[in-house]
Amino acid sequence: MAKASGNGRGKRRAHQVKSRAETLTRGGPGSAQLRAQEAIKAHPNDPRRQMTYFLQDLDLQSFTGRKRVVAEKTRTAFGRTLMNIIQDLRKLNMPIQRIDEIGQRHAVVLTAYWANDLGHSSSTIQNKLSAIRKFCELIGKMEAIPKREKLYVALEAKGVEKSAVTRAQVTHGSKSWKAAGVDAQAIIEVVAVENPQEALLFELELHFGLRVKEALSFRPREAERRDGIAIKLGTKGGAGRFVPFMKDPLKQAKQRDVLERARAWADERNNKGEMGYERMTMEEARTKYYHVLRKYGINKKVLGVASHGLRHQFAADMFEDITGHRPPAEGEETPAWFKQNRELVDHAYKKVSEALGHWRKDISTAYLSSVSMMSKMQKLRIEKLIEMFQNTPGVATGLLMLGVERAWLTGRAALGIDMPHSERIVLTVNLEEGVKLDVLKDVHALLQKLLPGRVLVAPLLIGVQPEDGVEVFFR
Image (cartoon, rainbow, N blue to C red; front, top):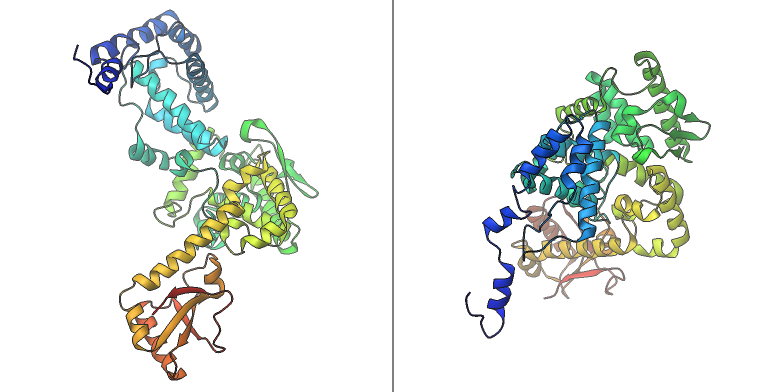
């Protein structure tokens, strides 16, 4: 053994390193291949018993770091996850007969189920995928479960966004179609020409916040109530919920119209009165649904939105229906209003969470954002606008040459409100003494050339710095 260095690094390194041969022998990659074959032979066509046999007294070693057996808590979670996976695959009409069948196809379908149907958090999904990957590696299927970009590509084909397995708990901005500049109703009308059923499914997601599985399982006639709809089929964990009609007369009229058309469609074309496809398993139905999404470019790459964004838009619309204001994620209000009306805002968060099928109001921050995050986003927007003026070649020097002494962001730009690209940024300028206001025409022309269509110039008429202004640069 090499002599340890004076600082102890050599000793620690000697303790941690384990050879490839040693890893393979005790609980490492490929070490349980024979055990899996024995389990399959002992319990043919019974994957649950096979998995129980496989897990019993399994020498589950860490694959990395120093040589060590994993903690009992980790072992228990690992086993529970694998047993639940077998059950989930049966629910999805993808039952396995042998535990060594588990591979990429199953992992992708399961991830779509966990993310879109059960609404699991990214951390939960990551933990489950890690368990599948470790199991596959133990039985010698080293590359069965892809990682990172390869995984994201496979998931996207099933309608699962990358954010579903990497997202933060609080959204950093609205994921609704409206916030992305996509007119949901216009897209729905285009889809309805050749795919009227899918167009109705989109409308149910947009106006009632249904998940994809809930929309496919939806029975309009059974669900309708006097003041809303009762969602019972296809829900997360089988828990039912009630989605009330909006208070706003126009929004409520639209909801009732969608419900009436969905009822007529389901009654005429489906023996069960469902909105889904007849004679298809849920997995087949979801595949067809996402095929239609791709047909119309409804994804992040083409339109910049995902199907789940309709649910985000419903959440934002319901928040506005309760409070009279758009949610923090859309950045149309300053944090002050939300802080001053905390009780109403908390009430709205709670009601939106319930309508979405969650029972903690903090879950709605994944759709609506939070006031603290809103403040950070607004500050970031202001900083980006200032950088735009300061870093665009020719802007600062050009304005100074024309006699602009100081300049401020004013109006909505100074508040850090999320502005569409078509909305002009108001730049209030103070001219040097003796410079005539006529020069503003040249200032406007300069900015139109360097930042076309972005800036509206306003003169500082009273000689006092704007109260809400944010200074862009000094001379």
